[in-house]
Length: 223
Image 1 (spheres, rainbow, N blue to C red):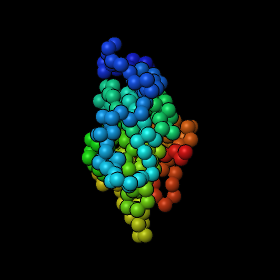
Image 2 (cartoon, helix red, strand yellow; image 1 turned 90 degrees about the vertical axis):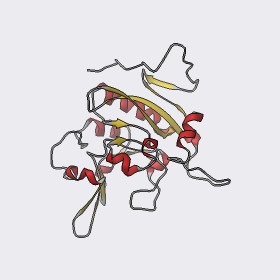
Image 3 (cartoon, rainbow, N blue to C red; image 1 turned 135 degrees about the horizontal axis):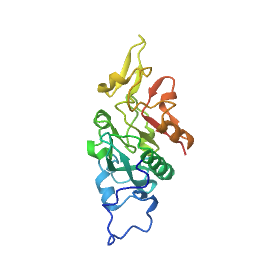
Image 4 (tube, rainbow, N blue to C red; image 1 turned 180 degrees about the horizontal axis):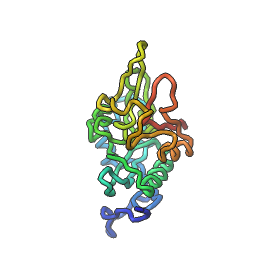
């Protein structure tokens, strides 16, 4: 088991840690957005606002998280996440438990790695949280826009909508092989999955329980 053998190679004794960084375990922490992070996300996942323009979330409402995870290559990797302050503690605890139990995640990167493109991120099976965007195929603001939702291994746990003739729309398209949830395959999130248990124990709802659509990758928590 990986247990507490967490990679700390990015931390030196000379490094001055932010006063407002909250460390849960070595390699698992969250803190307010730094100026560098704000510069990175502005104009991508966070709108570049014009004077007097406002949106439903501020930089101060968001936290920057660093976590460790076991990749599909069974090696330890460092991931970063931006989320709402309200779920930052939940997420570091959940990802620590996932790491400790060697739960495999292919990638955890900010949506900036995909130029803010949710489809590109999902197609690459990237796990991510904050992105100020609308629900796919809708004009309604997504819970991702408020940093209150996260998508886990989205390629293997797609977003599915249903047509009147009974056919399916699978998002991302390369996830079609994983739309049939009666099949058994690696990285599938269902009610027996550790990821499902950890999120729902902390009050998150799962998109796999929705009726009109199914969003098997998606966990959200309403403040």
